[in-house]
Amino acid sequence: MAFAPQIKIPATYIRGGTSKGVFFRLADLPASCQVPGEARDKLFMRVIGSPDPYAAHIDGMGGATSSTSKCVILSKSSVPDHDVDYLYGQVSIDKPFVDWSGNCGNLSTAAGAFAIHAGLVDPARIPENGVAVVRIWQANIKKTIIAHVPVTNGQVQETGDFELDGVTFPAAEIVLEFMDPSDDGDEGGSMFPTGNLVDDLEVPGIGTFKATMITAGIPTVFVNAQDIGYTGTELREQINTDPEALKRFEAIRVAGALRMGLIKTPEEAATRQHTPKIAFVAPPTAYKASSGKTIETGEVDLLVRALSMGKLHHAMMGTCAVAIGTAAAIPGTLVNQAAGGGEREAVRFGHPSGTLRVGAQAKLVNGQWTVTKAIMSRSARILMEGWVRVPGDTF
Image (cartoon, rainbow, N blue to C red):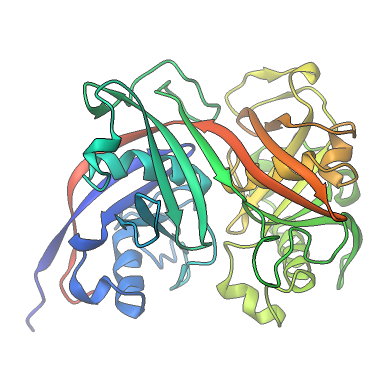
């Protein structure tokens, strides 16, 4: 029996924020994968090593976590006044699908840097020394992200002294602006899909919980940690080694997705694992982060723990941080209440790996809350570049 030889595709492996992904230029993909569809999905699954019943990704580039099972496509922008189009695929670890329903805020950082590396930004827009402003069109959610990328001697500066909890080594700081991050400007969309800042969310077989359901950065369901039996100081192992806890979180997530109108039946949630996110919040209290460092009560405004692809995230998803910052800026939400209430333009929250500061500008217009932008700092670094190889019969 003859087997197809491997083919090689130009690719770059990049850390962005607290995530990693395999980045491609659209023009470098095989022709059948340059358009959305089964061929592209099969390619990305094979690159990452999914579906993997061992949940180890030994035979692929993935790292067997939601933070490391990601692929990205960049191309020159099809949208006026933007530099690049950025398309993100969240690859399921143990099931055969790629979720295209949302963005990755962490890899948005790397998208700005890679756009320059890959020659997709007009050289006239890149200073010899200074900060390049990369205008990114996030194609999954049709939103604008502005990345402020440091440049030294005409090249992206990757090394620096900016420290990001959840990332071992310091690097150069990249400031991200998520413009108009909510759905309130979209036809039929709303930042609060239910029309309320807080709802009573009924979860069949589990109970009824207070919930803030918001679409900003990424659709997110926030509940109070205390209401579901937690303190907000939990680390990954305490949640991810408890199958019953994970089932409860998924039930809450599905109930929230239905109330937000993201799905019509509970069964649809199985193929929409990336959105919405489920997160729980609590007022500040001291805890020991996963690095062993103690986070003191006075260092944070609130505590947040969030799940991604069915597991507690080791730090915080960038898009979820946008949701946190936006909800914190709006008096009355559960996030705002956990932070002590009142009006605020920025919060520092505690997550399993440490702390993160995120800002958001929200205002009340004609009785509706709107947010103009959310801002946070991350970093990005190329880990490897060259070609990724997959068997020729993959797609």
